[in-house]
Image (cartoon, chains in turn orange, blue):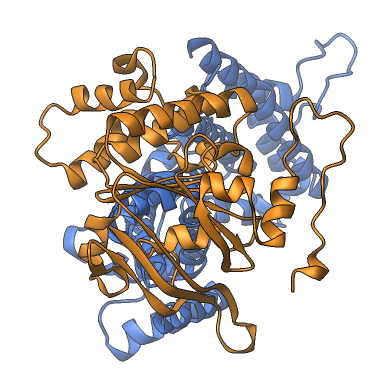
Amino acid sequence: MLSVRSLSIDFGSGPARVQAVKDISFSIAPGETLALVGESGSGKSVTGLALTRLLQEPPAVYSGGEILFEGRNVLKMSPAELRRLRGGKIAYVFQEPSTSLNPVFTVRSQIAEALSLHRPEVSDIDAEVARCLDLVGIVDPSKRMHDYPHQLSGGMQQRVMIAMALACHPQLLVADEPTTALDVTVQAQILDQMRLIKQQIKMAMLLITHNFGIIGGIADRVAVMFRGAIVEHGSTAEVLHNPQHPYTKALIGCIPQLGQRRRRLTTIDYSTLG
Amino acid sequence: MFSYLLRRLLFFVPIVAGVMLLTFALFFMVQSPKAMAHRVLGPKATPKAVELWLHNRGYDKPLLINQIPDQPWHDSLFISQMRRLATFDLGRSDVTGRPLSEVFRQGALPSLLLTVPAFLAGLAMSVGLALYLVFIRNAAADLFASLLCVALMSVPVMVYVIFGQYLVAQVFNYFPAFGFQLNGWSTAKFLFLPIALMIVSGLGADVRLFRALFLEELGQDYIRTARAKGVSSAVVLLRHVLKNGLINLITLVVASLPFLIMGSLLLENFFGIPGLGNVLFTAIQMPDFAVVQASVFLGSLLYLGGLLLTDLCYAWADPRIRLH
């Protein structure tokens, strides 16, 4: 369904030009979940945004490769085609729910905006918004949808973001650090919810995270990104239990584990990674 | 909400009293009432005439507090004037003797005829232009417009006035540059230049400010969310950016509303428009303390009213703000 082939992305121009993404390739099949793991600045968020050309151009430059979605190159789409793709076929959930929702519009009007763009055939907006909110586990949705974002807790806000993303039945959900801004218990609830929803509706997912700890139960495959390149790629079980690349080994060594006392967490020695 | 309003309105009293005390002190620090009488009546006035002038207007009383034995302490110039103003009795002009409520009513119309169209057109133009510049941001035209704005705001208003009068009245002979009458079409024709000048002199600064405001909104996370939903650039600007930017804009705009009534001191003077700005300007020159005092009184009330209105608008536009 989605296939990224030797994609390179640069930022800036002239001598200040930096290559943020270097010749990466991966693909996602319908219904499949791929986790893109890496540290801050490794290029994983840039990759996620690039899938529907959401990066600000300039400074971003797509310097090579192609992004094929259902056989068509996203990088060659017209603005109108891109708008149909965004939200309609590929939807996003971002890291910081408190700033990602527009503070001056109600939850209802923000979800309704997505519906009006991609599912104009929906006539009973209120019922559809309530259904979306119910799907992500919001109690009393027909009342909550008239709230403004600041009236909701962080976990509720992220549920609203997910509801908004799912409202238009996308084929691919790009979840960019969806639980990083939330505390650990809420994080677990949100991940459970996402797993549940994925079982209910057949939707592929690109899960972008720096945390190996959360991908175990949710991702089918893992791609590890380091300095803009994918350094390791394989099934989740394979990568978690038998990591090949020294960076992956080091990253997995960073996860604290229950029941192991007084073991020092590993650090990453960048000088050996080249 | 009601208690909030009441509390804010009660605060008006000490603030206005303080402003009035300051105006009073500053005015009479520069000249005594006697010197004022001499300036109004001319150098040849007899001491008797001066005394009579002072007595008729109450200026023979002690200035702040009456310390003369056997007289009540509050029988002073300042306190008696404050008691009069507290009932919204503006009094009469020291020089012409005309009731000031009438003077202000007459002056308000020309002032508003100048400032309201200039304000509305200026606001629409600067918001529209700023939105357009944000839409084409980083293009060459955006850079050029920014430079033009800096140029516009760098030129002193006086240059606009003199150049504008020369160009329109002398070169094109479009209308007399001076002399205002309330007379339908010719008034509109006459006001065209001062209104245009008022817009142009404020445009540069406003466009730059609004553009910066909108650009800041554009970098917010929720704008990225909107784009990720498939919202077009134009709708992002007109819906998401404008509504959020509006909240910041309100503070700037509503607080400036009272100044519309007070008129433009400079432009009214240069174009001979008999508005409130002109009334105040001549009163300071004369000097006519009654007019200065009444102008400051009304001006500070209007200003406070504007600030209160700003806060009310804030609460109306931004759901995160509650007044209590």
